[in-house]
Length: 435
Image (cartoon, rainbow, N blue to C red; front, side, top):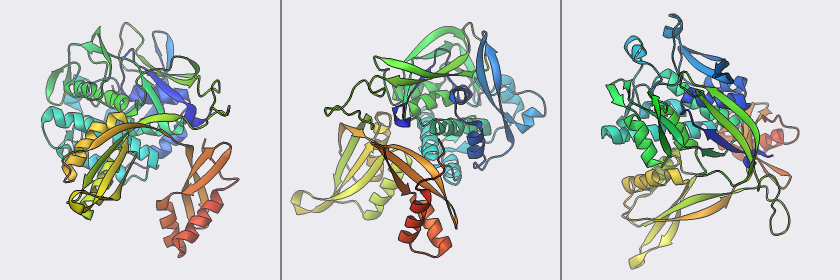
């Protein structure tokens, strides 16, 4: 089964949190050494990772924990399945957490040198949280203050989930009905109802199905809800599938049922080769549904459009670009086109209206095919370069990343084209592939 064939299914019958998700993905086979290597790129300190095993109602599960230094010295830590930063009321009063804005975290991630797919996924998860908090508190997105979600442990949870997802080669994710408890929970502002306001906002915005249980207390954390919303690409499971692998992530609470998140890698009928193309040949590039957003403008500057495209890509667009068009009254203009997934459509539409002079846009659904891809490191005399490797019908294509080409070009004092060729040559067989 190729990487692009994989469908990840998150079964959230006992809720979902950041640490449960990371534990389940590690149990599925995401490599701990890769996780630690990537997390070391974050400009945050004062924590250590603990990966172990735990029994929940007799079921063995992977227990992932981020232990803050001020807590480990006291031998007490309850990171995991609690509100926002996953701390109990007692932790809220005894542990200090840095308050960071959405802008702070965006800059932190941008400066981290994380691999591009990991960076984009982490930014997407944080944006989901930020939009929910902005709505709840009625304030601009960039000014949203993350209290618990801006704490070190939650930042690590979110980036760790993105790292593990990328390491497993997952691009398609289905999420079950989210099970939630009742009553109240504590946050920085005091006691609030369950589901927490930000969690409820994410449920509404991303149409996450939910079932309220008789369990007392919070089962879905804001981090968990944001991960579910940002990762989900499929609204339902396929009619037929084969379970290829199972991972268990342990929560930190005790309920009547096992407090675990089950993650499964599924192989669908189409991806297992039981169906082919019209020519009888199995199609190795699965189709997915995307939204196309378009608007025509003739009174928007080049600077505005360039900035808008940059913001759209940072906000989670799959692609964005401008094309010259002729408009009414014989005026030259541009068509701004954006490709995105369903869960990002509304926020990207709002961004277009905010940053351009557009007063209306078109939107329609299309299907697209993407080649299976992975990233490898290519060793050159001037340092290591990142290369995207795409596969199609048994052929492999090597595309050096622009940032690496630019860096090698400057170090070696050679042209950009020469640097590209050198990196491509270094990556081709036998390159060292990180499977």
